[in-house]
Length: 411
Image 1: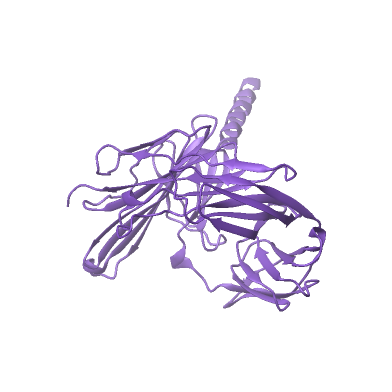
Image 2: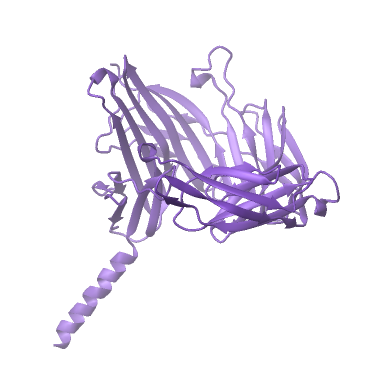
């Protein structure tokens, strides 16, 4: 009797330990996260591929503890019954260091898109402001210069934070900003969706001084180099960004010296454009690399000097790309996350096929194009690939990119 009970308890403990390290993947629309997207292929490490159900979910069971690699493949086909007009669009992701628990992936949900919702309201306390900006935690934004705002957004399952910031030109730094927020339910009812009658009360907030420099290596395009300064606000796990000042110029260094409201985490962002040889912009090999960044400022009282790393030089064997092709690039100066992005396109008369490598993440400066059910790199496809690196030491993100141009096997 006791041995049977012991066996049952041992089995329950083992099952609980396994469930604790499972990964529940949810695939939802990138346009409206309340809409689940089923039928998406998902792979955990080197296990067989699985498919999300109608609720956009699948539970993956790791065989080992720790973090894992999750790959995702989505194929969208428009088939009017005429081969010459068929359109195939593939999206490919790879995520590194995924931890047990729920993991949400934003996928293409354009065919499930619904009529957007309208958020309407007014502000108080912003009279005489040079600008009034409204931000939603789900990325919607608008302005309220006349005291009223109207923003197009999507329905949300839970209340969403609405943030308002007024900026004044005159007065001392502590008189330049007024801020407020509110939690709003944005629901859909039949063919209508939205919320109205919201009032954001904006109250004075103190200011924080930010100053520093961003230095850009010579490998990048130093024309139209820009820097942006702003602040990230948060209420619980809902966040929004306010960009407050921009400075663009030429040369290897740009400075910033400004004030931001002390309502969250200040940040410095910016970067350079990708410059291409005149008349040959269609060839990526003729384009200088670009860089983009956003760095959270932990100590605004200190001058911030940002030295951007050199771009990663991306290489692949030969000039052709196929399933199994390994891409290599320079290692970063510190530990961090690498990512390969790119697009492959093929068109014959009206037939079109595109593959979007949304981001193949790794923790090493190399990645292999993996196989997935239904993923085909057709002969004659042209591919433009980009490598990027983000250091682990950054509280924010950095994308130091380079590009290469490849084609698949001859048609």
